[in-house]
Length: 364
Image (cartoon, rainbow, N blue to C red; front, top):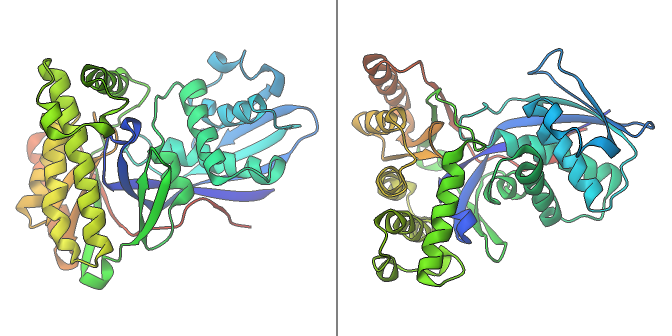
């Protein structure tokens, strides 16, 4: 067997902008999903996961579509990638997949995209070497959308495939044009802390899909293809107050992404982006309404302990927070969050500092 890995991600800034044709600025995490793969000659897919002992799945490639609702939910991601390769006309004679994920599930760190992209990269190398990175991104996203039932945008898969170590990825989703921007917090004595609240979110639940529909409704009300094309003046003309709030978040969040990217591109002290991160959280909480009491508590506690900025990351309704901190203040921030969670009855949060890591690649 050979082995491929793909990382999770955190978005420095740019939540719910990708499916609105906007801008995003993620980094890849050092946490990865591993996919060991080998060909089979019997026309079947076998998938197993270290996180799901005793749940080996074996399905004939010709039966992938028919068996979708009969396989465990976790297996729909790797099987969906195989199904998408076959649907696009690539010959896959059979494959065995052994999976092992270190990206926390439900933490808003794109564990599903890491899984899908690791499998997609393995299949490309084994069966379709002429596919481009953009092809891989589209295949992995289509597998999640159509086979796993998760209505994701292109952000997570783009980050998993395109990110490079030491850089943030500035991605224009409409054009699929991107730029690698240096993001070296260590040089400035800073750390980016991830705070996993322990409240899992799931994109297959209805809240995420509802926000996508509301954004589409706001764009339709303005007579534009996507909220990427709106500005703050136009947004305030939307009659429906709920759609107005949704659109206001997207438009202001796009502006925040552009602002942060420009600051980092010009070599600014990253401390300066802290207030922009916090403004993003306020918008996600108030206008987009995807935060939770635990996410808000983590952000508030991080600020109280001296973080330069903090915000929820991912689709929302649970998951994680990032906090930009002085390296010597990281422990104090962690303690403050834990104390706040204990006092308010939330579970023990998981915390870890991250640096920008490499995108998907083969490791042997």
